[in-house]
Amino acid sequence: MADLRERIKDKKRIVIKIGSSSLQHAETGDLDYTKLDVLVRELCDLRNQGKDVVLVTSGAIAVGKKAVHLKGIEKDNPIAVKQACAAVGQARLMMTYQKIFAEYNQVAAQILMTKNTIVDNLNRYNAQNTFAELFKLGVIPIVNENDTVATYEIEIGDNDTLSAIVASLVGADLLLLLSDIDGLYTDDPHKNPDAKFIEVVEALTDELMDMGKGSTGSNVGTGGMNTKLQAAKIANSTGVDMVIANSKDIKVIHRILDGRNIGTLFMAHKDEAFDLPLYVQQMHK
Ligand code: GLU
Image (cartoon, rainbow, N blue to C red):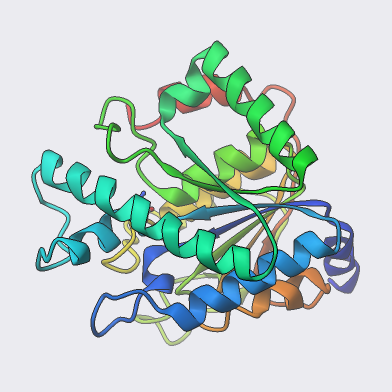
């Protein structure tokens, strides 16, 4: 295990995903600026070490709802309301990120994607070129789904999957999913006290993939364990190691990058037959 974690130290291109529930105060739903600040500082420090960094962030819809004083975090709002909230919230979220990144002398960029960005050859090629250019310029891309236009036909649907797609698209060597859980357990630890923590997953067996089914996660983001295992499938099949860790202390980012044994490590096992655009096209069908 120690050796497996040692190799994390050498990672050069890292995609970090943070969910809405990790960015908000649970009691009010408002942004947790302390956490945002630590997150940005951690990312800037990775950049200062010469690593390429991408942030995949949720929060557009949640922040937008707050801004226009809509109550509740339920998921059954009419689509247009959600999209309007996303339009307001994405801009606010970026404004906040831009401000904090600037405090640490880093430049951040926004990339909004849908399924079409991957499935359409020209769009995918353009997105890849944009990422490549941003890395050359030393800019930190901040990615979200383009929730304002993405209805069900073209939506990826959750940022766990989106972050794995991005990791694969940019040829990252590590995907770090920060969530409200410590990692993968043999069963739901809230319901089963005998559930055991899994430190490393060497192969994504069918049995393992089935374990995530039915898990819903928190009621803020869209991701439960199922979407995290789907993300692992995309990341690992395209040669990207993935770690799931708890975001309650955002400083886990540098601890993990220092090779410490935190969270669950899903080891890459590149499958040459895995076709990302085809896989994305067939998702949710
Ligand atoms: N894209 C959505 C948002 O920014 C969140 C999706 C997710 O939480 O997985 O509000």
